[in-house]
Image (cartoon, rainbow, N blue to C red):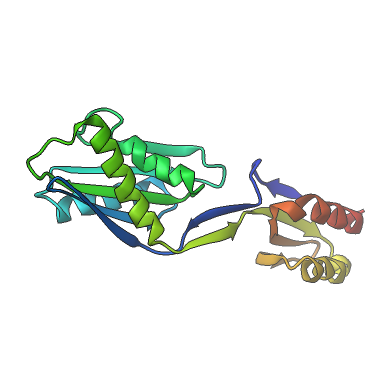
Length: 201
């Protein structure tokens, strides 16, 4: 039995689809967008698309958080004073405990300087608006188990699959042995491993 899993939690919060928001202050306009994402490459592609779409904007700032453990993240100020844009955006992602999400805030300068505290507040409020308009969903973290077994053990394996409501993502049936890949919810992992171990003894 080969187990591929990390020390991850059982569920995480993310957003279901793209959402938008807007915040205005002293003539400056802050357009915000929240995207569900899963990889850094996705983030780069979307950011580049927004830079192209809003080529005439003064700043395109963003932050993202990735992974069920929420350990991959970045905040980008894009020319704004250090920590006045990306960090407040990331702060809103964190306050909602979201992951696999990218929030971009596009700023059109209105001619009046907002100052450090004004910028921090503007990016925070813009990010909050996009997240507030998003549909947040809870996703289950699953890990893959590969099981190798003899044909007479198939019925017992399938009983565990049915009882534990497991997802079968691949199977190979051979002359001497059979292989099956199962996706197991992390909270069920130890119980499922033990049940299968008893079958394979």
